Image (cartoon, rainbow, N blue to C red):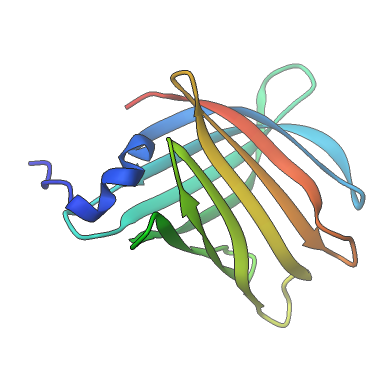
Length: 161
């Protein structure tokens, strides 16, 4: 049985569901690549969204390749159309984003980035999520490995559930 949506989640309800699609990635320290992605936003009746994303390489011949990044976290709506997002990565990085929600669009920027001793240096990021017609588009700009904040990943996903 699906729990009732907490009223605080109303501004974020456009994100609910499972989304799949493809995107592109690049950064000065790596070669450009194409990736497939599955992203989900669920809830349990409490005032937060449960978030998970996983990606995998799309090879030059179009087949799915090796797993790439994965992240999990929680999206917490705040008063006045604000939102807080906590993300954890298995690579030893934890990020806290703050931002705002308006008209099926979420803009986020890092408030805190913490990393383990063995994790790559990531110092900041911005994320944008929004509906493009029926699709969910998103983009991630990153500051890492001595590079300034710049485009890293973007994708367009279709709701599948």
